[in-house]
Length: 535
Image (cartoon, rainbow, N blue to C red; front, side, top):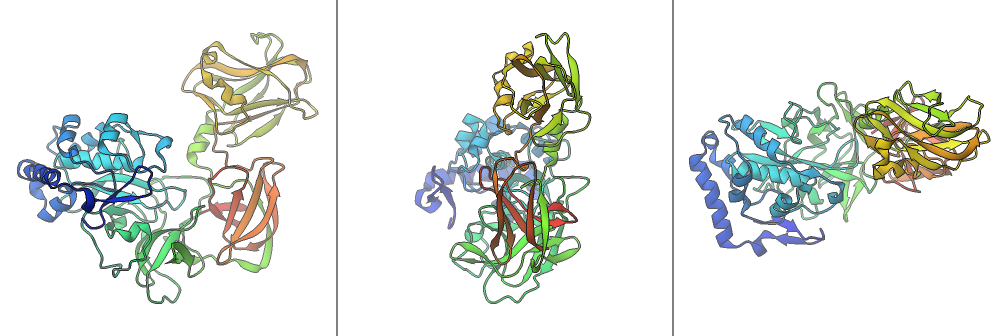
């Protein structure tokens, strides 16, 4: 049990198993698993070592310690399949756990909490799935991505371990064949083991949290991911060297080695035609680093590891160039899809409240930009009412405003069609917050609009689709940094439009744009051929 623990409710203190485990509870848990070993046909093909690692343990990860899940799970999950893969898929589909942002950053939930509340985050779902599989005599493992190589988060999931040690991962309850694919750039995948492995780390005490319990097994090569063995282009002194990935809160270690050589380093290559976001660079950005007094410190310039090898990113401070920036975070395909919901939408003006005299002044023919955007109104007449309508399909909009020909904001009272009037979310369209939105999955002739109170000329209309608010926002203050052995400030300015221009930026540098007014989603990038390339 050394190193096995749960976190306290506040997520600060560790509660070690050796201090709280009761013999009778542990014995009952072990006996339950040994009965499965004798009776479950699946287990007859596995070695005793596999049984001890993937069925027998009384805990899965660092969840609050409870034992009765082993005999309670069969009451809630079941399968009649004699094929272990089909059985695991069937059980995975029964693990219905809602993913709620309210739980992000919180400690893992206990089995009883998850079964009672039905909500959690990815590591909660992974834990519950592994519990359900192990309780049915199906060997399973808790696996984790310590941090993505293209977005600011970590990930966990459950995996079926087959007798030959091959795997079938389950990212969610999807059984369409895509559930085994990691859809983001993945630097490393580790498996939470019960047994400990101290050989690699030479019993060092000063280790980052990921490696401190000596219970993570590198299983990157078992997944459908691009990976590469590399040797760092530097001299390495005694001690561990790490590869760390970017986080706005500091570099996050994802791999370690006692030498300058690393195995199975993620290259960011995804299977098939998976496209996570626009303008992503080829490869994953890493910082070769050391762990010193609780922080990651660089030992060389950042590198990009791709299927083509290792590229060093070194700022050329002697050569400067201008950059024009439009975002602080890559535009995900998910956001583009949301913006697509506004295609074929139309803006109309009228003087009758039922829009019986409506005139169309603008139609969205292509997928709009994923930010606020303003379009001119050529109609020179005066009108009291203005609306946005989508004839059919998903109705989605985040913001709507109207301006006079002189650029003054027109004051109004919100109006909507009868179907939308029944929803309390209509105010989100007019709250000046791009992150809130109104979305209805299907309908015909749905609309929201404005009663301007009097007839007036409308000079322009401003709107935004559902978006992530990571485009440049007028009025917000931004700071640009470049990497030169640390983050060096290159300039600061308040945005006056939808883009920013900075002069005298070191050529070839790794850059980081921060919005100091609001928001937390930011990613580093290089500036190549007049555009941002994201890492």
